[in-house]
Every structure is written in structure tokens, then in C-alpha cells.
Image: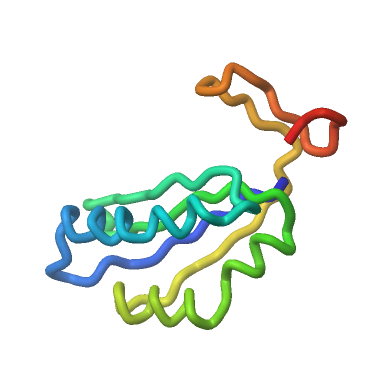
Length: 109
């Protein structure tokens, strides 16, 4: 599994409500991606930063999601250049599912 952290600046004048409305519009397309396990949307009003934390099945899946269309949407919506970081994720303690998920173990994911 791969954890991807994406952050970007929020333009002056854009409210939390507008950011969350953008998130709500994007959620169905992320939910439709079979390679995405989970996405957490991020917002920090103090630092004017936003983004997402994604849990992907593979690095290939994560990189496929970062196409030119995605980059253009972030740039046009937030007038900001996103920062993207990737981390190998060998273990997830998931309290919502009541499971510990290990990458690569038979029967998991």
C-alpha cells in the first residue's frame, strides 16, 4: 500500500465552505476509483493550506491519479502548485473496520 499526501495553498478570499464544497463535488469520482482504499480531505484555515491523504493499493495507482487533468484542476481551482509526497504503508490500524491491515498478507486487501 502507498500513502500519498497532497497539499496546496488556498487562495485569499476562498472560504472553508467553498473548499468543502469543492471536496464534496470531487468525492464521487474518488469513490469510483477501485485502486483508492481511502481518502481523507485536509483543511487548515490558519495556514491557508488544504489537500488530501490517500491510501492506494499501489504506487502505480497513485501515480495514475496525478495526471495532467488533475494538476490543471488543482491549479485552476486553488491557484496553487500542489506538493505530493509518497510513503510505503506496510500496516494500517483501522478502528472503523476493526482491523489491522498488512500490505501483502494473504487475505488482506
